[in-house]
Length: 160
Ligand code: MG
Image 1 (cartoon, rainbow, N blue to C red):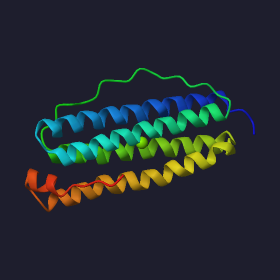
Image 2: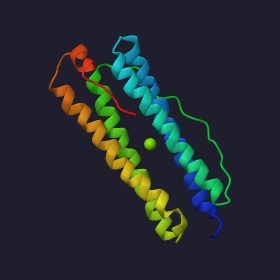
Image 3: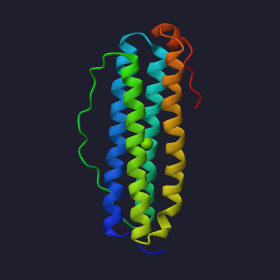
Image 4: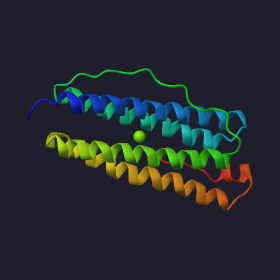
């Protein structure tokens, strides 16, 4: 296996930042829910934040396995002043679609650079993004059926 190229290493370091910023976004959302005693939604978003951290670690481990160097960039402050549950759910869905577009870019870069040793990692993330987008849009669909914040919260349970 060839050592990871500088270009792909850099792109993966940038993706680590994207994943950690995703965690930061979801932590802010979890806090908004927790303040309003919407505890199941708070838990859902906290678990989502932990998943994003795991995504970042997956890229980190892969870079090291391929003989590269990990650099943690500064994280940007994220929006925390939400108006409603629906605004949060729609922002989540939009954000996951954005992350999918970033993974697709990585997929194209891997092909362009012929870095086939990173193919499997990217395939895993492409499949993961199908799930992430589905989770986000499912929350929106469910919420449309409730229209009462506490009823909705009561029906949100998340499995590990
Ligand atoms: Mg992610």
